[in-house]
Length: 222
Image 1 (tube, rainbow, N blue to C red):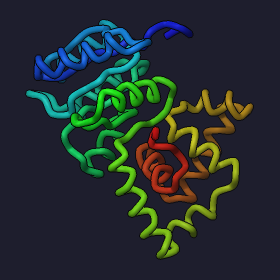
Image 2: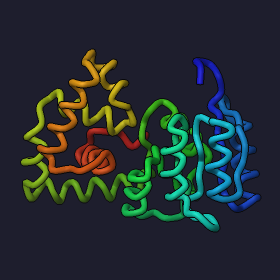
Image 3: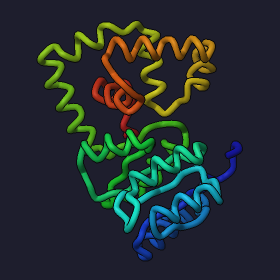
Image 4: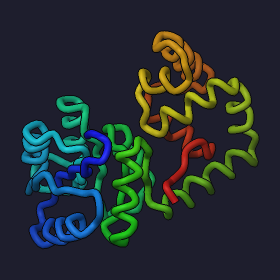
């Protein structure tokens, strides 16, 4: 995507009426273009590879292959597009499963048109979007941990530079992008990430994003 060009969105949902509604919404919003549509997860993967949209707006529950499996397949086979899952599940566990699969956003089907447009724009800019109601749950969980001293102890192990790197990675930045933003070499960023994982006892990127969200290091897009 070049500067000034529209955000190209692939809409993947098994309900024709919902796809039509989202298409009309995006066509009426400034700066968007509907790249195509898909009726199930397998078609979503194929159409993503074919059309190379900027964002795949993907229903998490469709016939055949699940939306979560399709998300992982899209990220593996076509790493350029960002995936925003669309779901009825207002559930923290589903949210983190989507992040683990590689999604950059988690949007509920009862979201307002304005929220959907804002979420897609945030994700295109490299952010991570999740519904505000999930933010409340994550904050409550963090406060519980903070009261127990568990999070303070872990967070205090990070240097200022490491906290900055955690925040950028949680916003969806690659190691190369983090290196460019902080004027570091990619190898240095990789060393920092290894240290962060060890200090926080984390295993992968999804766990790191989960930690960042719970510690308020990345915005929910509001």
